[in-house]
Length: 520
Image (cartoon, rainbow, N blue to C red; front, top):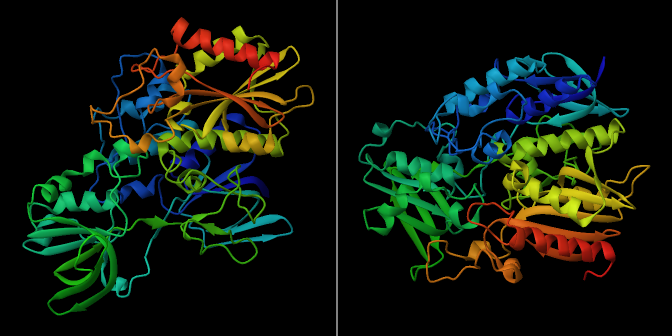
């Protein structure tokens, strides 16, 4: 039997796609999972067991769509019982709760998963993939949802001598009275530093790049406040330090490690430092070892991710797709595709793309009157509720196409996919289109949100909405795939963009000019 889709990995992304395919009931598919249960990643990571994905059951709203803005862990389902917020009240939950949730999601959606099947080889013959696991499976398309499973090893002489994040011991008592170097400046590095502060004599966290705070950049993969207690101990001169620069060499003897460090911001350019332990918290990368030469995907981002098209397809292997954490190659360190609260929508968009390409199904759309008032109403309603545009800011957009007296509203389209592939159908063209996104200002990561001396645009200053740094709706008008004009809706503290004179009337006027051909 040749399947329509073979999904590798029963983590959140694999289960999300399986749930969508199962609900459709139109395609033959199977999920292969190496472990004996779904969500195996979360049985090991994060090592110190606290997730940094927000869980907020109490939002003050009974709108399930809007509530997903504050629920970073749930997968998408029409069943309210399959919301992660039913499982715990903790704002930063324990990883074991995620394991239990994913098992229930798999069972509740009826996802077809074959457990205990570790994929060892993927090949492609005559346009069909052959995937070797517990058996040999054949499929027309393969979707890889394995996450980044290979520890990333930077090219540092002696790096093989250190202890890695994925295998290091985590009992703080095992580091009693020791000097510890942690390589890396991401959340895993600072999570580890926080866990060891009480038992070590000294901790240095080192890396060539600056520490970037998520609350400033709005990229949740940068250092989160929940992991940054270590910064206090550094800035308040409590023995610990952050080292900016490059490690030239790591050597080990019977008494510990000698690390040669090249500083970026100190007069002493190169220095040798002594440590009892060296821990590598340098992140993870995609493992492409299962692919033979007939279908090995090209890599990107220093070899850490598969290179992908705007449809999440391999740039060099037709029919090979990627979902979940791997999909962040498309918006690396810009939006949220590397995390559940982002890629759950990416997977839903991927499902629509696959149906459009292989099932000849148009992108689902709501028909509207092609009037400025009707289009304004639809846009305002969506930006005030949508969790997808909120979470996948600047990456997913709603697209309103206008053809004669017919307008159609398409939800959650990858912006670059629309630019490349369009949404035209036999009875409706997309030469006139409005793309609706939620976006931060262009220099939002240069603004210190806690500096009260930095002025902000007033909420009711319509003419200056384009200068806003905070998240707000942006509507772009395209004619024959060429950007003609852009309109920004004024930012709002409560994220409610529906004030008649501030939001609604200016948007309607903008749409009127566009449809009349006078916008520029």
